[in-house]
Each structure stands twice: as structure tokens, then as C-alpha cells.
Amino acid sequence: MNTKRFQDKVVLVTGGNSGIGKAAALAFSREGAKVVIAARREKEGAEAVNEIKSQGGQALFVKTDLRNADDINHLFGVIKEKYATLHCAFNNAGVYPKMKKAASYSVSEFDEIMNINVKSVWRCMKHEIALMTDAGGGSIVNCSSVAGWGGEPGTSLYTASKHAVIGLTRAAAVEFGRKKIRINAVCPGMTETPMLDQTLQSGGPEIRNVMLNMIPLGRFGKPQEIAGTVLFLCSDAASYITAKSIVVGGGQAIRA
Ligand SMILES: NC(=O)c1ccc[n+]([C@@H]2O[C@H](COP(=O)([O-])OP(=O)(O)OC[C@H]3O[C@@H](n4cnc5c(N)ncnc54)[C@H](OP(=O)(O)O)[C@@H]3O)[C@@H](O)[C@H]2O)c1
Image (cartoon, rainbow, N blue to C red):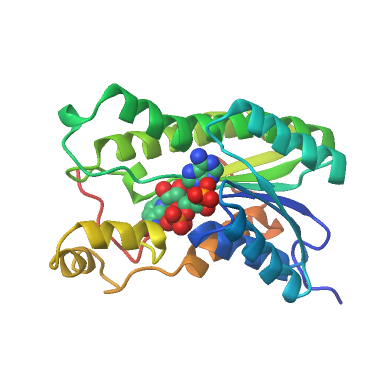
């Protein structure tokens, strides 16, 4: 009996060349999916594809700057040409801006973070919903954060962007439920990826312990632990779950 949950399904993972996205791309592929990875860095994209192929899977990297509408149109053009359909999408790519107080950010910093963390998710969803409507259904998981639920000092724009991802997820899920498209969000806590490394490096010697003290499980998450929830949400085991945002954060308390 075939127990692979995503056998021959076409799955898009944005930001699938690093961190959480790469863990998800590898996990989907181990479960039989044909994985499309979209991100900017080609070397890391080729490495992710090679890892997938070396474990016997199928993957394709499409160089995409998700801030750019033409790149997104090209990405979905490639998916249509190669596979003609899309079953699941993990809209994961995102950035964590320099931490400062809300009043200190510039307009261009605001535009930059909203462009990648929110607008690109919405732009991808437009294409994904069209393909999944044609396919008779599908599942989308958007990457929010524990920052989508609360607020920590120094994170206002990131927090606003991740709240927006949850709002987009909830309203779109209500709109497209009758088309059999489920839309949920995953909300990682502090997870061991290059993004977290960058925060730890820029925060001074005490920051690691300060952050660990916020987590009841006493450790940072692993990208594979976030990927596990993404795969669950995309799978038939979650067939009655939509419009929800699930925190995977070791019990981290949500402040404010
Ligand atoms: N790590 C955490 O503690 C944590 C906690 C909560 C939420 N998250 C969220 O998890 C998601 C993944 O982050 P991560 O921790 O895995 O960080 P990461 O390793 O830095 O990965 C970020 C990914 O986003 C892609 N990306 C960024 N800007 C892009 C652009 N303009 N166009 C296309 N791709 C772009 C990057 O690829 P390229 O640079 O090659 O384009 C990379 O693959 C993000 O949405 C993040 O906000 C992370």
C-alpha cells in the first residue's frame, strides 16, 4: 500500500531554498510530491533541488524575486507549462527587518517589508486560487509567526506584516471554501534558521538566553517541526480545517 501523503501532487514552496521552506520542500518530496521552489538565490536553490533529487524526489527551482509581479507571473507560467496544475502551496518566503521602534522606521522600510511579507503572499494566492479552482480544490498554507498573534518591542512592522498574513488567510479561506480550497496559516515561534541566526548575532551576548527564557520547552524550534505542521495542514488529515492559524512555538507566551 502506498502511504505517501502527497504522491504525484504538485506543491509550490516559496523560499524553499533555506530554513523552514527548505525543510518543507524536502519533507513534501519525501512524501511523493513534485516540488517547485521559488526564491532568489540560485546556488541555494540548486542545492535544495539536488538534495531532493538525491533522496529520489522531483524538484524544480524557479528563480523568483517575490517583490516583482513579472517574476511571479513567470513562476506560475512555468508551473502551468510543466505541470498544468497545483495541489498545494506553502507561501513561506519572508524577511525579518532590523529591530527598532515603530516611529523610527522609514516609509521605504515599511514598503519593503510589506511587499515581501504580505503583498507577495497575496499575489501568489491569486495565481494559486485560480489553478486550484481549475483543479477542483487544493490547500494553501501561509507563513505567519507568533508575531501574528502578539507584539514584542522593536518588531512593529514585522508584527503588522504577520498579522496581515493571518487576516488574508482567514478572509480568503471563507471566500474559497466552496471551491474546496482550504487556506490556513502556520505561525512559527523562534526556529533555528538563518533568520534566527541573524537576530542572535545582532542582539548581543545575552540575547540567546533572553529568548530561550520565553519558551516553556526551553529550546528553539527546528525547521522540520514547522514543516511537519505545514504538511499536516496540506494533507487529507486536515480536510476539515480551514481559516485557522496554528502556532508552533514551544509554548511561547504571546505578549500584548
Ligand atoms: N526562523 C524563525 O524564528 C521564524 C519565526 C516566525 C516566522 N518565521 C517565518 O518563516 C518564514 C521562513 O523564514 P526562515 O526562518 O526559514 O528564514 P530564512 O532561512 O532566512 O528563509 C527566508 C526565505 O525567504 C526567501 N525570500 C526572502 N526574500 C525574498 C524575495 N524577495 N523573493 C523570493 N524569496 C525571498 C529567501 O530566499 P532568497 O533569499 O534566496 O530569495 C529564503 O528562502 C518567513 O516568512 C519568516 O518570517 C520564521
